[in-house]
Image (cartoon, rainbow, N blue to C red; front, side, top):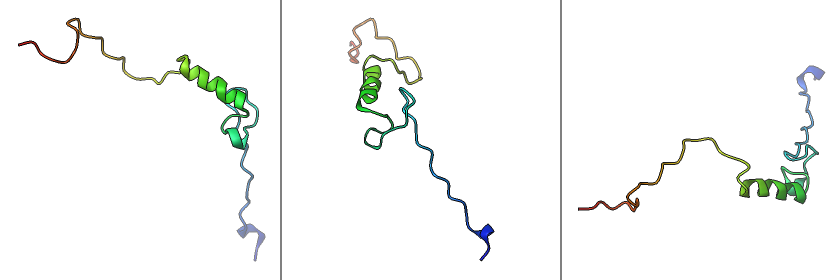
Length: 70
């Protein structure tokens, strides 16, 4: 058996915390700690993150309840 036939196995690189950049913890993945997990959640609650998309339609001037007047 030749050595060339054995594939080289690389260790996976540890992922980094998206908040502080430290190596992530398995229990709080992808974050390094409970603190960084809560910082991220707070950013979502305060609308610090936004998903790009089309603007929401403006409300109708007549009340916009969806019923047509006859």
